[in-house]
Image 1 (tube, rainbow, N blue to C red):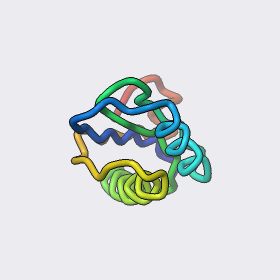
Image 2 (image 1 turned 180 degrees about the vertical axis):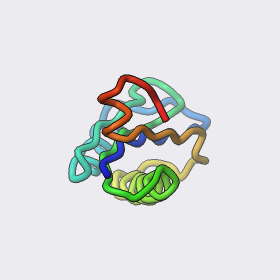
Image 3 (image 1 turned 135 degrees about the vertical axis):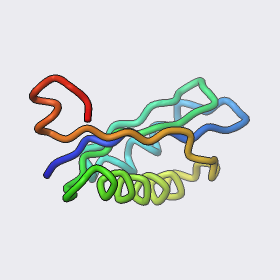
Amino acid sequence: MKWSVNVVAEGDRVLSREEIVGLADAVAAWGGIASGIGTTRYGAQLLVDADDRGSAMRLATDEFVRAATQAGLPRWPIANVDAISEADDELGYPE
């Protein structure tokens, strides 16, 4: 099943455009988009295949951490992770 997973890390300084562009490049392989320019948070939405919500969230979080490291971002704590399945999204409600 396809899942759209949002992962956000929060820290103690404002992030630059270049840093978030680097994250966007690093998550592109996962159909990902990145956010956080000018904030103390960086995040990404990744598309993953998984059997259930928990597995999707774990896989996306692992890839998010890998992508953030690749982009040279600080290793900040994960502040939020949420996921919605493709089926639920088509029905118009979160899981």
